[in-house]
Image (cartoon, rainbow, N blue to C red; front, top):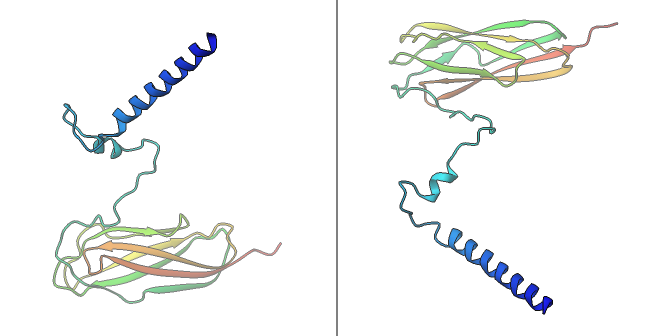
Length: 168
């Protein structure tokens, strides 16, 4: 008799779990009586996930043209633990004010500074890039990505260096 009771209890538990699963997942595309639907839950942000910013955060401005004197700079041979600066000069050769909304290096060792105010047509500006190689060694290539109201919105500058380890 004890075996029958255990069997009946197991079957009822199995059926109960199946019923609950069916009711929770069978109608996921239907709205309930609340002011939300199941899709809202999938879009909730994970508080531990890294914040991902939109790549294109340029205000919706008319496009213009940014012309650089050079798109690449080679520092040549430099030593570890040094600070190496280069200025990329540019001119707004378009017909609209140029707004640079962001400039970012491809790693923390490459830090750009850019003008925050609009650059009028025909006017020039500078983007200063500081490269600190730290303990890196050998040939290094880093990018500076500029976002502006240009077409395309992204412009890439390149810096190169051969980092030498000091002789001991």
